[in-house]
Image (cartoon, helix red, strand yellow):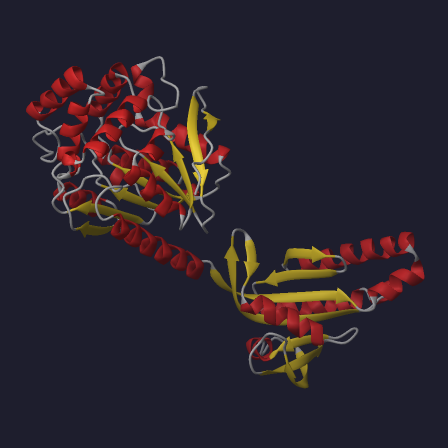
Length: 451
């Protein structure tokens, strides 16, 4: 897989945010980095690039540099680095990448940014995945998980004296991926990466923002499916904080992974991707189940429309077709049906009641006769699925096949429709058993003859 092209999204306050898109998987996955990043330079660090290619193998992956680092603009004021502005940046990137809804995968404070987006835009968030997340940077009496003042001062000293050097990279790697600090080529690659991500002044500005973050109030407002992952022996991010965060998010799942590595892109990345994929698959399955509803489908089409159009000519046939459409839509409105699709001379509609659906179909068949045309119709009740705004499922297939079996001026209904409309006053005639194309077993159909 080649390195993806870098593009830019424009934020609401006019900054340019660098982003990349790769992969063609069945769902969008937006990765929100912690601290700093560089969408171009990460591909030069072998473990980083390999991990993101793993993610792109199961998704349409969207990567971006948060404002203040990498290839994105540095805002003129430090306060413009706040998480709330990051939410606007994430939305701008999704808009530019053509992503209506996405799974958000956030690392460190990138998890809190993703969490804030999920609470602000739940309609655009499929699920939330947090890896080694933190909600508050500094330790306080009511927060035992943050950095102490001594730890923060040690970090500041290293940044001030060694930023961008192999010495700083080695020290950082020794904490984030113990054992890898002895890999000279890896340490040198990380040093180059850090230099590409941010200047010393940019790091200081980002660190200043981090010290002020307290995203704890956000946690209980996250109402999308959430997965929290943390390695049990992570020396930089204690697993206890991940446990707290998972417990604070309603319904969140917690997966504690073996290992000492801090970032998701080093160590056992296969396990990270496996857990991520399993979680998303369960969410997508649950969404599909929640979007299945019982409905009655009706299919109608004009019998012999090609011959009739040839006999009348294009202009006259267009007038007949227009009046046909008007009548069908009037009957759908009368019987509270919903038009789903219109293809040429056929209609597909859904109803929340089978009796109204059958009566509507019968009214359409009788109503078009003065136009000199005949319509046939099929009616079936079953579970339909809504995916990306489109209605489908086996019930739709069966309804279409039932309609195809009808003759001119005939409304055929499935056994299910007949059984569910008992007492409605509808009159049915047995039309025998039929094979429906692409549907198992033989189906007994009934002719709707009146009410």
